[in-house]
Length: 441
Ligand SMILES: Cc1ncc(COP(=O)(O)O)c(C=O)c1O
Image (cartoon, rainbow, N blue to C red; front, side, top):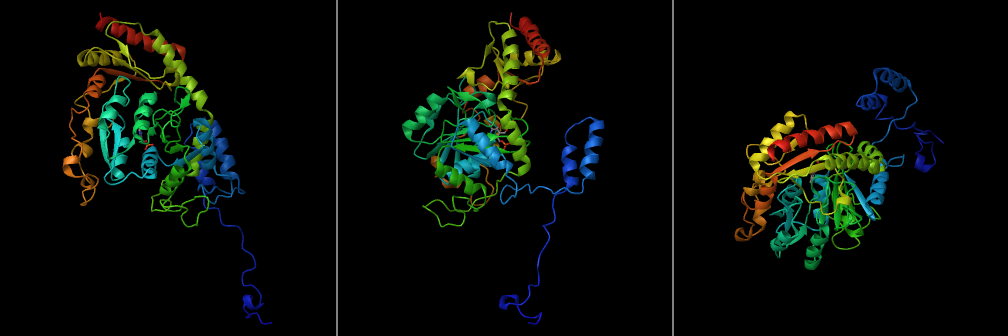
């Protein structure tokens, strides 16, 4: 038989064997990563020698699917589901994308409304508009989280979801919020971006509403630099969120199957988490209790040492046992005293911040969300605002959430560092007491 005989007709194969795929990511990339950590110079040299000197290395895929190694993203999802106590968990590349995927999973779209608080990072509201729906901005109470009474008044025939935010480490008033939502049959998306690991009445935040969304960006409680998670007990919502988060790759039980029921196939985006963030997130989720213990110890030591004083009050925490303790919020009697206290405490070296200052733009306060207040659009179709008759759009104004502005203009916020020593905690409390002793006589 000649060499020209086609293999399909019994001839020799042109390609007998190929070597393994070249490693795309190698040791130089690992070295860049290691270099992000501040090891001692001595150890860095040793590590560099080991890493760059090893010629047998095979690099990682860093892609969660089709990975020959067990996926760290999948492991992080499992660990997060176990931590939060939900059946399903989906990793995303941010909480912003988690929120869009959650809203989309619930079917939020043109002509719908989603209730959000007037005090939250802008993402909670922006993602509603990015989903072509209308954010309905509602006031907060003295916990600085959504006020359940105000929610009830804001519900209309268009309300498709309610998005309470567990703001600055504490749980929102979830029993009352769920009562209102359940009475009206409206799903709740918990924005737990700032309160990963917190709980309300024994249930982890993110496991109480229909869906929970978490941020793992560097400034949050448990972090992976960037990253997010969605938690839910509902298989259908999980499936839809997963499809939205991966274009239309739809990893449903069977990737290439036709849809099992209406609403399973649609065009999505790409919010996948990479194995880099997955690996970091996994380690952080495993350390969550230890991380929380650090915050809780430091916060309770500082708080206990602050002398009670007429005119000083603390933010109400709907369930103190569920506080992640990343932030201590105090209220003073009026904005003028608050401003003076802020300057004086800073001069004492206390790392404290104010919240509302009319001269400083802050994306956490609705008065600065001109994108929404002025109904800005990305395209000429006028969406999301053109999706609702003009006379039925919410009436946005800078004074629509008076309680938020009242509390925020009297608030002092101390971000807690979980690595504070007891001596540092005591020095911070001393600085606060010194100032308040003078200002609140
Ligand atoms: C309440 C809240 N929601 C959503 C986000 C968005 O998170 P990410 O940065 O992961 O997109 C943040 C981030 O600051 C946040 O604080």
